[in-house]
View 1 (spheres, rainbow, N blue to C red):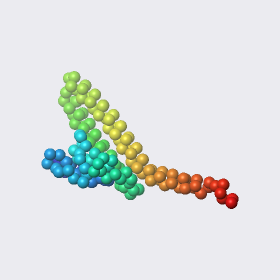
View 2 (spheres, helix red, strand yellow):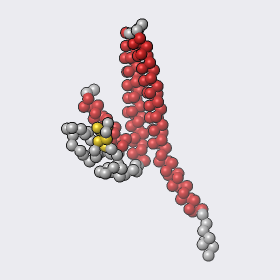
View 3 (cartoon, rainbow, N blue to C red):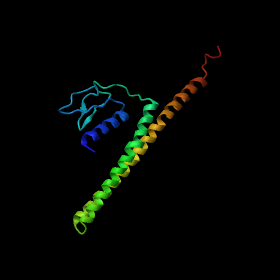
Amino acid sequence: MSGDSGQAADLQVGMRLNHVPVEPSGPTAPAGPAGPAAPGNPKGPIGPFVPGGSGDFASTPAQKKAAANTIETELEPNTKKAAEYADADTGTAQKGFDGWETAAGLKKVADTWDQQVKTLMGRLAAEKTSLRGASGLFTGNDTGIGNQFLATNSKLNGL
């Protein structure tokens, strides 16, 4: 996959997850409606709560569902594939350096990488679950608070 198509895929995922128009920026890209790029993140905006941002913190249940589906169908499987690819290449390199200290170093790097991937996969799963459960929680809270108002009797009710 070329760098341009990878960059386009990153932008598409960013748009779905962030519900913000994301444009590439940098020395050749003009500032667009997404606002200025954050330091260290040339593809994304600083955020909705800065001057020029959208100011919209809300998202619809459909947007939450779309973000959870993106995590499930794109981020989780692609992260798993990348981890497996890296494990295979690192394993091959380890065998090539068998008997050298480099092999032990590669083993340590591979173990660290595997732990980081495991942590990331857990976080992605938690975010997906949270996104899918958020709408139900908001609806339940709204209904519960509404019921409290209906159940509360005022001293003025008997007058």
